[in-house]
Amino acid sequence: FDGLALTEKGQGAYRGALEMERASHSLRAHLDQDLNLRGIVRCSVTEGLGTAWILPQLAQFSRTHPATIVHLRCAMEIADVMRMETDVAIQLEKPKRPGAKSVRLGRMHIYPFASRDYIETYGLPKTIEDVQHHRIIHQQAAQVEENVVPRALNLPSIEGIVALRTNTSTAHGRAIELGMGIGGLPTYIMALGSELVPIDIGVKHQVDIWMTYHPDARGVARVSFFMDWLKTLFDPKRNPWFADEFIHPNELIGREP
Image 1 (cartoon, one colour):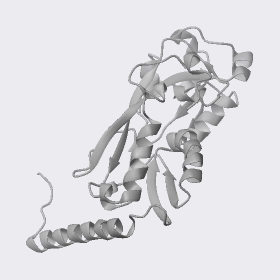
Image 2: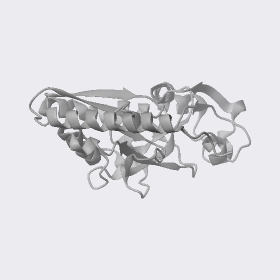
Image 3: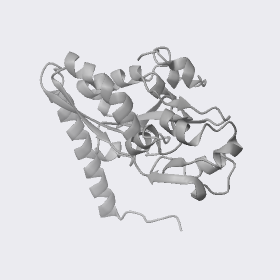
């Protein structure tokens, strides 16, 4: 069973919908060429990257380009660019939507961190085996690999050491800052001035960062300009923590974006 097939009428309706979609992009491209006039760009991004990384850079972007209003949708669920749910999406899964354009922006390196309060209360694990006697903050959400933590810790289950489980990156990071447990965070937090302590137990994880968009989006000047700006945020020459090669978090202290 290979799935359902459209009837002749259904195929006609589908072709009509595609023509309407192209007409919509064409009209927008025609009307939205002057970047000095007010216009909106919709950007969907994973919650952690959107809040911790892109939003701080958007502050300067908004001052420099006040006519462009950015609708920043921060969520772990992937937005569908082909259904025009967003103009551009940044995600941690390789785009699979047929017809969509995509480009790999860089690589995010995840490393275990703990707060100084946590270390003062529970001590500092020195090996993977030590973690079995500590407390873990666990994020469970779309685009977060399901079994990455137990696999990294070489444990069949982490249920006995989970102190908090949450679906959001902001709650996950905040819980670590509050000393509730140890958790994996992107290494770029050190460049943002974090005072968390990297936990050197031989564990690290990496995930690629992808940008995807409708093929007609490049025809809209404002969207195209914004996408090019987004790419600069992940340029490893400018921001080396997004390079393919891992850099220890301690080496990123003081290296501002």
